[in-house]
Image (cartoon, rainbow over all chains, first blue to last red; front, side):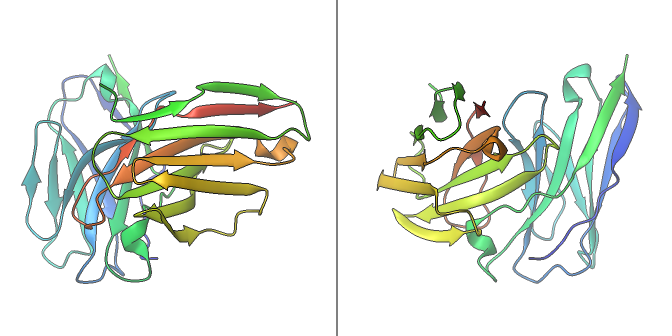
Length: 113
Length: 113
């Protein structure tokens, strides 16, 4: 499985932007970059995904490096409800990864009021 | 209307018992998963089914037997429960295409005493 590397934890203040980094230097050409988050006592929740171009949706933005070896999840204005573990995951066509999402340890985001 | 629903939400049982967890999705997805999240919060894939066929079995003990009666259901039966089986089990579903999002259930907290 192509692996991702994320910081164990990050801290932010409410209403400030948050940039969550992810390194995936062994990404293959067919791997999509997915982000999920898990709020306390809930199941993982989809946030955003992309292949090559930057992506925006109502929850967040995804900035993908030109060489695709890293990406950044951007929360434009963090709220207390954004406190969660954020997972960066690669999902592609090779090695059976099409049929699974392999979760790492993720980044625990703390949002201070 | 819940997209991915699991029952029961909580399950407390004694060692040696046999128990089942049910999962249903109403999204029309063709791929379903079971994940296990242990006390250290690490999410690990157990099984993946595509169109009722087992695709991935991540070296799970054969006491765990998934069953997919149709594309909308993936149940998990566990025989001879052990203390180490205590965890939160999550069901999820996706379309098979890599550029699509996964939906997770709210989890079943299994406690073996």
